[in-house]
Length: 95
Image (cartoon, rainbow, N blue to C red; front, side, top):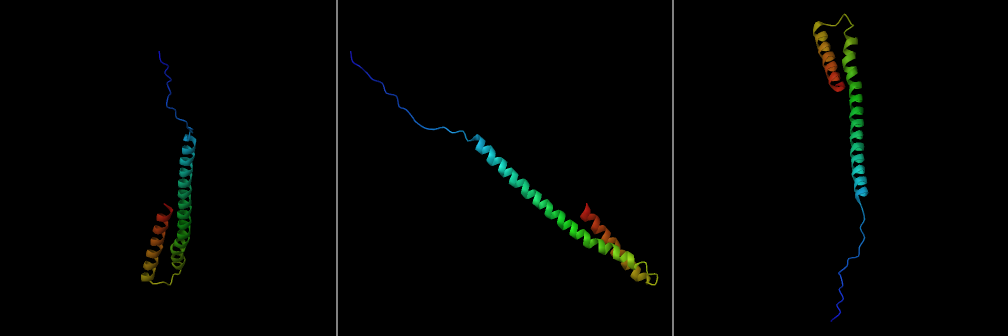
């Protein structure tokens, strides 16, 4: 009888679980997205605030001028239109 030696092919390697790393990358990506959205919201709020401040003058100054009883009806009508337009624009900014 003969003697047979059987050798198996073997593979040596390292298996590393990177699922936690993948989750961390996804969370960092989401955090960056949320930071960008927050910054955009802050910018929009700042612009709306500044615009509303400007529109407040447009809406209120004609009201002060309309207190003058010596103004002609034509000027009064023009001031009323300016006042109403300023109030409408301000309402859009605040909406």
